[in-house]
Amino acid sequence: MIAILLGGPGVGKGTQAVRLADETGAAHVSTGDLLRAARREGTELGRKAQAYMDAGELVPDDLILGLVREHLAKLPASGDVLFDGFPRTIAQAEGLDRVLAETGRAVDRVVVFEAPDETLVKRLAGRRSCPRCGAVYNVHFSPPEREGICDRCGGELVHREDDHPDTVRRRLEVYHEQTRPLVEHYEAHPADVVRIDADRSPEAVHEDFRQAIAGARR
Image (cartoon, rainbow, N blue to C red):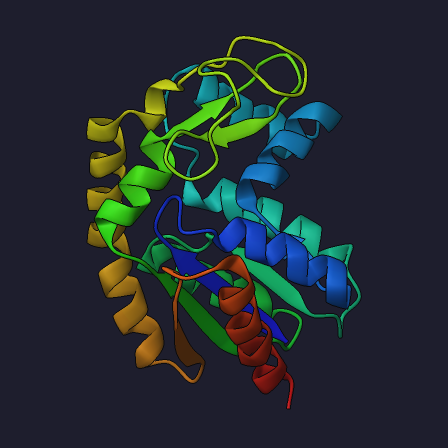
């Protein structure tokens, strides 16, 4: 079963994907993780990707798809795969279709996690992280006991530049611009598109997500 998970920044798809992968043994594939791993390992694709990132440029689709192809070759041919936030454009979707077709596979299900933009702005703009121990808080939903101080290690919490409200809203604009046609692409595709209301408790979202993926396996 091949599933693609889509959703705006802060919607929680990555957290849900990791949880389901832990529960079921599915492979969780995030292109961000693949890029970081390739850079650490110093692979040829990793070195090429690093050159683009060092120059402040986007990594081209052909390099991303090459990393995906390499990673899929390491996985069991019949195993479940959860693509987290990839593809992001129709060109990437068409490229992924070609990569999967090389092994006789195809996308079975597309899960779209949805929540109001203002909810996502609060989730991300309210996020504070501890550079010392990695703990993450939210000033709206899960604040630290002392403002600006990590409960775990006492470190000073920071507000990432890309989590400022204006930046988050721009990231959401880009997501909507890219993803609306992508969802329409998959709705005209043999894959089933399932929409999940992510503006609920993580448990409620996970139950719907688990059922959506279980339905794709039948």
